[in-house]
Length: 96
Image 1: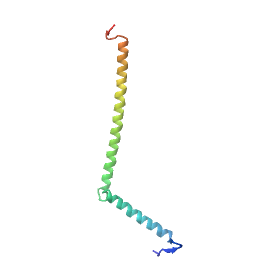
Image 2: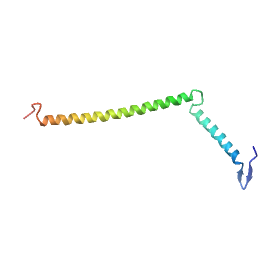
Image 3: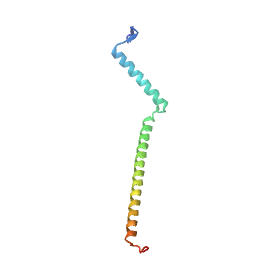
Image 4: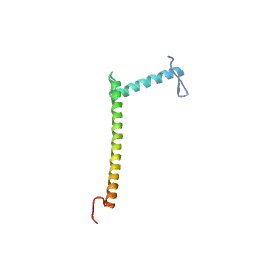
């Protein structure tokens, strides 16, 4: 690796060496970030898979819960409508 030169206050170096330097810095930064969140050991890939699976299950449960709420509201409205019709038609021998 050639020594970088300084011209007009700017550091000059060959593009290939600059790319290598960027790759090294990015790799070190990624390793440090993974270490900071505790994903540096051999179980990290399994941990990520488990987290994704858990998140998928949570999303499915949330979708199911909303579907259930909507069905309950719809069913309640239909029952109220049918009860109103039954009362209006005096099907239960209601008050005259």
